[in-house]
Each structure stands twice: as C-alpha cells, then as structure tokens.
Image 1: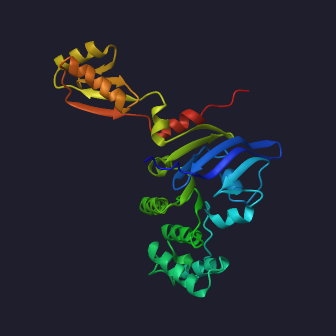
Image 2 (image 1 turned 180 degrees about the horizontal axis):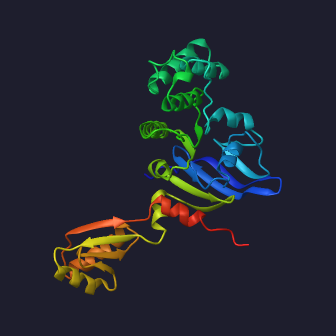
Image 3 (image 1 turned 90 degrees about the vertical axis):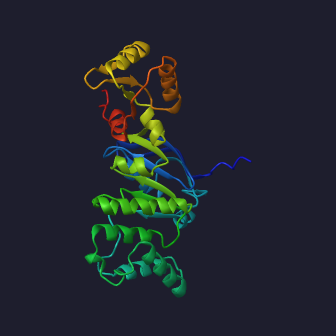
Length: 314
C-alpha cells in the first residue's frame, strides 16, 4: 500500500515585503514538508533573514499567505508561535545565568510547571552533553557549547517547526559537525527544520530540499542533487589501461576531451544512473574495457554562483 503524502509544515504563497522603496521579497512561494530539512540559500541581502523573521511572526509581511503547522500566520499568530522555535544568528543565551538556569527560565516561560520543567531541563542537558557544565555561567561556555545551549533552549517547548538562521556561524569544524548531528536527530524525530546558511557544504549535507533566493526572488528549488545535475559541466572521467583502449573509446564516443598522457577521456554527463548505464553499454558493445571510472558533477558552490552572481541588467 502506498504511504500517504507528507503534509506541508510551511506553506507560503506570494510572500512580499518592502522596506521603504526597497523590495526585499518579491512574491516568493515555499512548500516545506513535515519532518524534513529545508535550506534557504542566497547572498547577503537576498532576503533570507527577512523571510525567517516573517515566518516566525517577528515582523509582518506586506502581502501573501502563510500557513505554518496548519495555522494561518496572521489570524492564528499565537498558535503559530506555540508550534515553532527560533534560533537566530546571535545567541539568545543569558551570560549572567548558568546553563541550567537559562533552561529553567525557558521552562518557566512555557509554563511547564516545576516538576515537568525540571525533567525537561535535565533531559535537554543530557541530550546536548551539557550536564557537567550545567551549573557553570554561560559566559564561560565555548562557542559550540553556547550554540548547543541555545538550541536546547529552543527545544524546551517541543516545537514542531524550528527556524535556524545561520546556526553554525563562527563555530569550529567539530562543533559544526555536532550541530549537524543534532539537526539530523531532530528531523528523525519528526521535527521540521527551516535552515538558512552561508555554508553551502552544510546545506548539501543536511537539506532534503534547497531554495535559492536572489534579490528577493526564488531562482531555483530542488534537492541538492537535482540542483547540481541541472548545471552544465558534469562529466564522467574514464581511464584506460593502454593507448589502444583510449583510441578505441575515443572512436566510439566521438569528440570527447582526452588526455593521452593520463590515458583518460572526459565525457559530458549529468552523472545520473541512466546516463552512466548508457555510456557503459556503448563501451561494452564495442568490447572496450575501462580501468577506472569517476563521476564529476558541479557542487553547490557552482550552483550558487551560477544562479546568483549575475548582475541585474539595467
């Protein structure tokens, strides 16, 4: 039996926002499925943070319709706030409190009650590996510890949708990887993550789908692999055992880029399974053996620059 389609955690239609005469969001549409990670990419000033601020009810939009966790953003703003959590570029941690006190404060704000709040705090301290540092001032925490505490504070209310606005900015590689694993664990538990990031590797590793925003408009959307395959420049590199094999393959495949010294051919390809199967079938039919095959596709850096680097024509 086919499974039921995943429902939308975030549905956005025609979202618009201007500041004065500057159009920041020019009618964007988004559809974010429950229990997935959705990454919004774009250069500085493209409208990413404005989008997060609108969707998290911090500022109003000028136009468009938004539903989050089944609730209308305007008419049911309180219900939206109850369903979401937000971790911004800058930590919301209070340095004058201990890690534990920061979490207790959040539990009180969510009206959890003393016993339930203590249980929730203890669980989050353990989950984010902060138990030993729980009674130390947050001002003594490393960048990675502060980010973990900040995310733990977001989770006190058990949100169904979490907005992460550049959550790993300034973290060292180890702390960034730990944050990535935390995000994966949250999604595995059914939480929806809406992520903005300047680290394209981060989006590639975490996102189920990516949208690219440029000058207030969405210029592309798809899975990381779909976006990379859609960009020209992908190829398959074939290496042969001798010059005879290279010559034979070149005759069969036509005008490919070849390197006689390395005994390689470079064949344009999107890197997909059908294209690879067709290529290998042609070689097999000609009884040509390949010593080594490697697939090279554009990465998200290539996608990002191809979609956002063009200057507006005036």
